[in-house]
Amino acid sequence: MSRVLNAIAEHARARGSDIALSDAQQTIAYGALGALIDATAATLVSLCPGSGPAALSADNSISWVVIDLAFVKLNRVLVPIPPFFTT
Image 1 (spheres, one colour):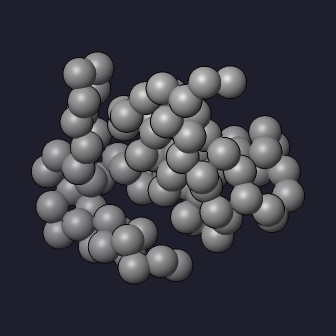
Image 2: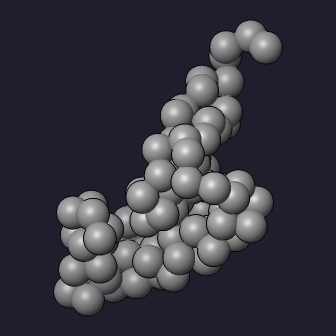
């Protein structure tokens, strides 16, 4: 497991109710973040099969961070594509 995922797991054990991520729509505590990353990784395995890199075009949000961390969990490269890029 990566250092960042290990750190998230440690924070969840030590301070599970502390806020890990927050944006205009939602707030996620450390205690819930690991499960959210795991669920997202499981979904990505079916939606984005394979082991190669993938790209994501999205605005900054908790969802973006969780998807990025799910790709870390899957040991896959995720290339961020800023939404202001033209098609």
